Length: 123
Image (cartoon, rainbow, N blue to C red; front, top):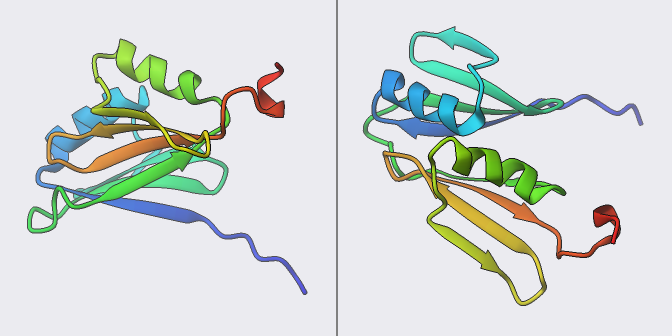
């Protein structure tokens, strides 16, 4: 069968769009890819993959969003350098690494990565 292109948008509810946008701009190190309206901001994290924030005060702080990446520190280190520290760094029993950040509303944005020393690591 014909394969369809699917664009995935992961939504995060924030209490205030202006302060949320400031934090996520620092987190992603870039301005939003686009602003669909005055209560949303969208960042592209990969081809056909987006994270967006939306001003939904009644829902703010309950989101969890995980990006699974090969190059964990290439994502995490720049965020730390921009002044946002992870709240949790852990390695699971299966060797998968997981780093969690928390935005001012309490939403969790985390990165997962395969075990250290995998083939994508080059040794």
